[in-house]
Image (cartoon, rainbow, N blue to C red; front, side, top):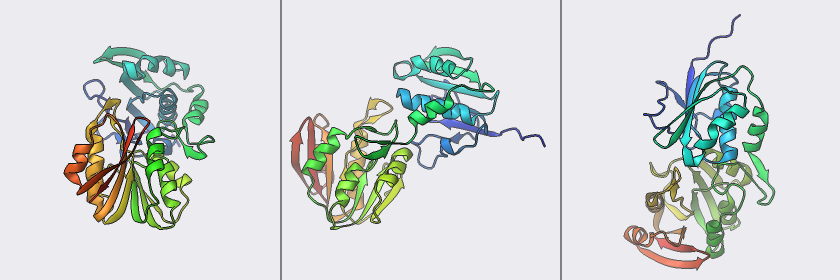
Length: 306
């Protein structure tokens, strides 16, 4: 029996529509879109085509390109684009190293690479292994390239850990990453439950492997949406302040509002931020009481009580 032609179209991330519009009904494949289909879960040669905004990090980008080539049917169209200064200048050469014949153009400070998936792409396995989930021995934790601070303890998290007293009751780690802060919180026997939340599916999956504690629950969610818990006793967080490579202070402010919604009256939020970020006003406008609990190495640690 002849194999059925693939019908599924994919889109990875949020490419500029005027540069490369996904096919109608294309399935989102990015780990930064809660609820999206995992690219890794697709069968070999099951995509009829895809459009992708390539990630900026080299190892992560080659991993995504290799996974797309693995999952796309021979002869199917692929369009990969990225800002020139964030990996776009290298996409064509990386695709050619996989054995692809690429046509490239440039618009809106982006490089746009178009190709048909070759019958037998080269060296996909090595790129997938290098960019896949892996145990980082210096951390003693599972992680993956592309996750925030994937192979080292972020200094902001270290500053928060140095200032944080043993928490108690029901809590949440917002923007949990691979779980380093959650592990410290769960070292307190007074913690009864901890919810780990992150926008990045890869971080949540790594945290599940790292935090083997029956008190832990996990959520792949965007904290700018609906609250994922309520009536908590404490929240710990190291909010992101970049979106798509550009500084976005609104992200931290969204975390502050989310923490306030999730806490009970009298509950506390512990937050670390780069010294230059002006979170004092949003904290004071949102919480009943705010105190600076630490300041070192370019970071500030606040406790805010609801």
